[in-house]
Length: 265
Image 1 (cartoon, rainbow, N blue to C red):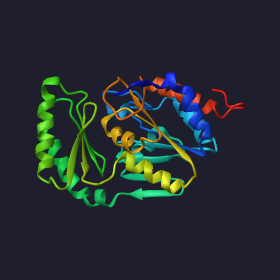
Image 2: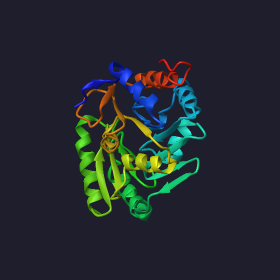
Image 3: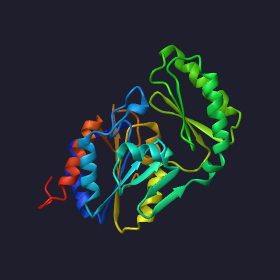
């Protein structure tokens, strides 16, 4: 359970940041940097948030990674900042300065995932508001615009389709979205740990902010770092809590201010 408001523990967070040799900052996109919207294709990053991420990425002692369920191409286009590390499809594909990773299990499952996307698109065509999004390595079935009484039907369709190849896929439930992912031993936490290893800095402090169930893997994996759940307080492996993307932006401004003369936030 989230017990700690991040705002109430900034002095201790500041001490850990100052004592670190390097900071690896991991940020989810939807619900963390950008508010959740009914149509996922309309999510965007505010100019203010974009500017503060650019400022953080320019600090020599900080590496910034955007870790999203969206495809790498999609999230990179929405953030629009060169020189960052981008991890798409829940970390199954990673690209950044000197970094490149593509999960082999996910690549092998691409053809089956295409078949699954086609089957779901056809099977769910009579339910208003469903969006089936094939992201090449994973698949999302969005229900934000689906009537409450139809959402269980959508879930049954997703379960039935994925059950045709139970050794290939697993289903996770997010915020009004069903995620179909390959049975790879890889997730957002694995991606952050891999990025940390590739950067190879000594005494790295990892900060990770996310809002959804898929971020829980990162919270558990990065338990020795600073983990922050964004949104309504709920059961989580994160240590701290922020209530909205606006609060995340305020925290990022604060984090950047630690690098100013005198180091006072």
